[in-house]
Length: 198
Image 1: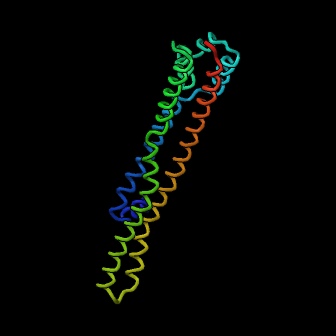
Image 2 (image 1 turned 45 degrees about the vertical axis):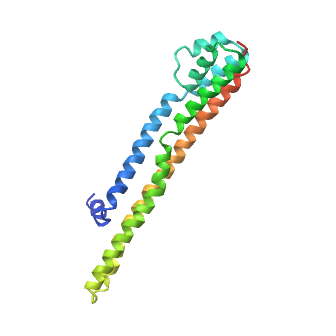
């Protein structure tokens, strides 16, 4: 722990925005995971619902979606309770699904920004460190090791920036995978809903 704090201090002032970026990435990821868990419909429930729709058993589908636990159930209940012609219902369904899919992508742009920003901040910290090292070297020309140790310390910021970016990139791709899974469930549900005559 002491070594970690020592490295942090040697990284310079840029380490503070990097730590802030890492906390933001973790907070966004946790919030999104909890959000997706709330919106997700289990495979068993999804299969049961799709079977009802394929068979045209509207009453059974409505019974399963009476208290929606996820977006698939919510969309199904919404569509089956619409009192419009076929065209109007399809348009309403498209709007509903588009709104849900946009909600899935919310805040992911911040993760993309952190992936790009963290290495740049690290590089900036390294540049600041190297400038300081050269200033030290100009004052202590007879001690060449002063610049090498200074450069070593300056590279800490770049290393930390890359670590933050790599971890955030992994988290971003994991969340994109969760979004793809939710989208596929919604798309399959919509295809089955469009075959229902009610």
